[in-house]
Length: 486
Image (cartoon, rainbow, N blue to C red; front, side, top):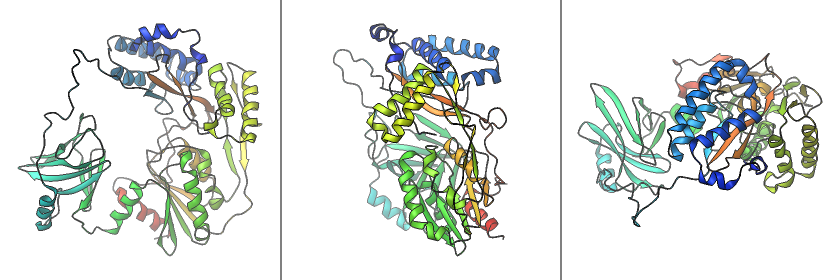
């Protein structure tokens, strides 16, 4: 699969005058455009309709149409448009804003700063550090980091109050209250204020080890005072917090390879780690590959991993592309737009693909010679003997394509929880709305695994299910013990 970048198509709107939309860019018009564009061009539209039924679809349309009538602002419209899209599937769909709504000002009045009258906690940083140095116990109090903020948390009465020590966001300044932790009858609750000062409440507050605080979906790491932690905590939070791939030795028989993302931008980094450590990988008995919390991306990003874990030919079921005038334009963009970085050889492929698609408008087209491609490598390495791939519910799209290929090796077992399940309809494409307020993301292709082996809304099952009694920071140790036969 190709990793698709954002493109802008003007030909779609030739029948719609710019002036009309400029005068009437309300949510209803945006909805009508999203609906028509998706119904005409999305490769999964008919499949979803067949699965869910026309009656359910019409009821959904009626509900959304009523909602958009009452929407007056651009910021309210986006979530409702996404709600309409979510009828079809949980991934490979998108609505994203192009420009922010700016409130009109009257009488030359200046907009009020969002920080005016915001609650503050006046604490001098050095005084707070001196206070922390004298503490004999470890709790929530301390100085923590969650990018782009450094936050001090201090107990005030029965509350723990988090205040800005340093901020990388211009909307927040030193001393302003960023979060609160409350304890009532032994039960904890929290409120965390987002960059725009909207409040996110949670009752899930977890201090893992001594240096890692989870508040709902927000992860904070303690930076002061420095407190030694157990290795299992350090290993887990290093891996989860990593923004680039790395490899490390767990013991004499096991290597650990962490890959946070298969985005196309990460391919060079992944290849570099593989090349630098190939001798180690092919001379060590066990290999753990951790792709938890992945981002999807490009199939090319994992291409150099497969030869190292290979045992037998890898079969990959291909996709069919829905041919429409809008969809086929992408092939011309590959040829004409330098930002795609296509080589002359790839441009020839794109031109050939465009020609084939144009001949079959309104139909699904297989651009390959057959339904299945078979990939063979020249070498089967004796090592690694055992490969454990760690997965969770946040792995989808390209992550799942990698797993489909990798698990065909006799060496490979999957550990963790069921993946996200978003692969049957793929190859995302983005087009702007006539009002240039939103970009609609939809899909160009559907897998020829349908209907015999579907993954959407199901996910891929692990060979070893890591249930909740195995805490997330213990997963790597657990996989290591299984691979080593302990």
